[in-house]
Each structure stands twice: as C-alpha cells, then as structure tokens.
Length: 106
View 1 (cartoon, rainbow, N blue to C red):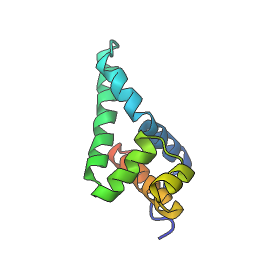
View 2: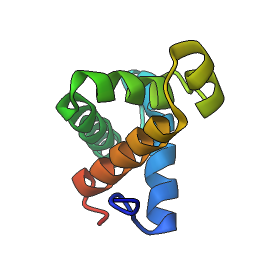
View 3: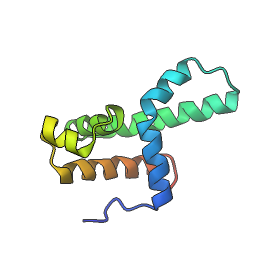
View 4: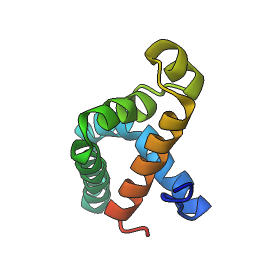
C-alpha cells in the first residue's frame, strides 16, 4: 500500500500549503474586506479542510492537527509525541489526499 495516497506533485504541494495555511487563513477570513468571490473561495477552502479533519478518527485527527495546525516537523512529532516516522508521513499523505478529493482536484 505504499502508493495508496499517490497524487500529482503539483496538486500535493498546493493542498499541503492550503492545509499548513489553514489557521492563518481562518483568522484572516474574520477580517476579510475583499470581494464576494474571494470571500466565497476562502470560506469554501476552510470548510473543505474542516470537513476532512472532522471526518478522521480521533488518533488520525490528533496527528493531522499536530502536522498541519501546530506545524510539527517529523522529528519533533517523534521526540515529543512519540509518533513513528511512518505514521507521521502516512497521516500527512492521507489528509492531503482526502483534502484534494474534497477540493475536487483529483
């Protein structure tokens, strides 16, 4: 199952950035003063990410929040939270894959 969550590199990079920017974007959305289209796009992205995170089981959600919301590196997650390297990358790939599906990018 090594390539279970395989997606095109450019899609992976885009979705990963959206996930890593989620917290900051959510704060920015509260004070958004741009056009309606921009507001709709930003709101939709935040909703899609929240839908994916809320759909995960408890363990996966906790790890995903460390990776994408708390910005834990793999080494920090392993040393402070005792999360094995393989689990860290599996959850990262899984969340990116599910978010790409939710965003209809794949």
